[in-house]
Amino acid sequence: MTYLDRSTLDVLPVSAPLRGRAVPPGSKSITNRALLVAAFAVGTSRLTGALKSDDTIYMAEALRAMGIAVEEPDETTFVVTGKGLLQAPAEPLFLGNAGTATRFLTAAAACVDGSVIVDGDEHMRKRPIRPLVDALSSLGVDIEAPSNCPPVTIRGRGAFPSGRIEIDGGLSSQYVSALLMAAVCADGPVKVALTGNEIGARGYIDLTLAVMRAFGATVEQVEEGVWRVQPGSYRAADFHIEPDASAATYLWAAEILTGGKIDLGVAAPDFTQPDAKAHELIAQFPNMPAVIDGSQMQDAVPTLAVLAAFNNNPVRFVGIANLRVKECDRVNALSSNLSRIREGLGREEGDDLIVAGNPALAGQRLPASIDTFADHRIAMSFALAGLKIDGITIENPGCVAKTFPGYWDVMEKLGVRYG
Ligand SMILES: O=C(O)C1=C[C@@H](OP(=O)(O)O)[C@@H](O)[C@H](O)C1
Ligand SMILES: C=C(OP(=O)(O)O)C(=O)O
Image (cartoon, rainbow, N blue to C red; front, side):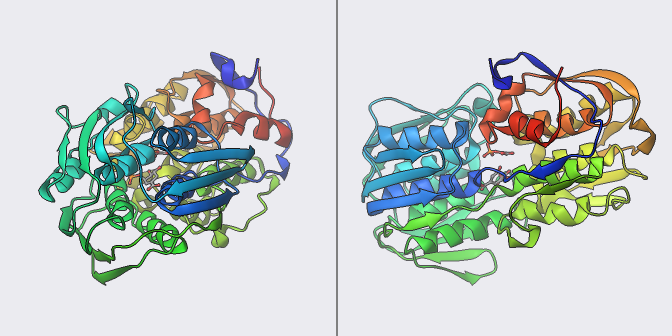
């Protein structure tokens, strides 16, 4: 039985600072982008340093169901052989709770000649996709999502329509990334224009553009919030994927919380993913700022919020409204679970989260069972609390398999013990 199979996991307080080498797994965001564009390319692409976890396995399986050969010669490599087109799958594509795979494949399905149903689990079926559906529909794509969430039915006509497409990225930047990547397969140039100023982490768009260009796409920003994608085809490429910056945040936090030394094998400034920005804030612990804008490092907010519980002063997290439509309502999951540890430790004010900050929590016995809501980031971040507080139990620890299946083992190698 592995830690992933346990129904609960007690994280025991560390008796010594965490030390050692722990390289995070490959980036989920980059792996799922690279899998998709390699599938669109003609020829064989070798993706090394890739993440193998629920989210990327769902993506790989979906591509196989659409006629793409995806081989896995080792634990961190995908070899993708594309034919320049995706075929209509025989069955609905089931994508679990993988937001990237679900949104990226919804737009990609417009390039298929035939019907595609994009679906996910009960959590994904509550995550909004209406803005992406409306944007595709406005361009003439035959698409429907009656519940405004998956399942989505797309009846593609074999090519992405050309023209100008407007998209509101306020709820999810993944809608924008999805359109940009699929637009390369259009029969003419496509302009993707943001409506509204609000977008989640802008850095994810840069990540998308970088992967597209690495596979030969021509895409440029023509004005603020407007990109032009030239029609063409992606070129197969050998592509190395950097470690996951969101996964790195747990290791950075564990290091500073225990006064240890963890070698991640990559320096914070060398990451290209948005969440690497969290490193500067983690480095300020136990004097983190009074206000943290989480909008440009959203997936790092659970890490920062649990760390803030031990900060010298309270921290207010702003710019995090769209955390309510992630794997779970993370604003609520963070405030409610912090308050399970100690009443009032976390509270919500509108969409802001306020963490009281109390260094004296360390060393106390405060039994709390953490409801992870099947959300990997809630499980991984609250495990950090267990390093300093006696009595932290993580419910459903297997949910970390979404992006970091080796999390509990990696922590154990660094010195963490479980009950
Ligand atoms: O594009 C991406 O790879 C991602 C974008 C972000 O989501 P939203 O754009 O939905 O905020 C982030 O939370 C997610 O984990 C990965
Ligand atoms: C929000 C996340 O994932 P996704 O949207 O890709 O499901 C995440 O990994 O924290």
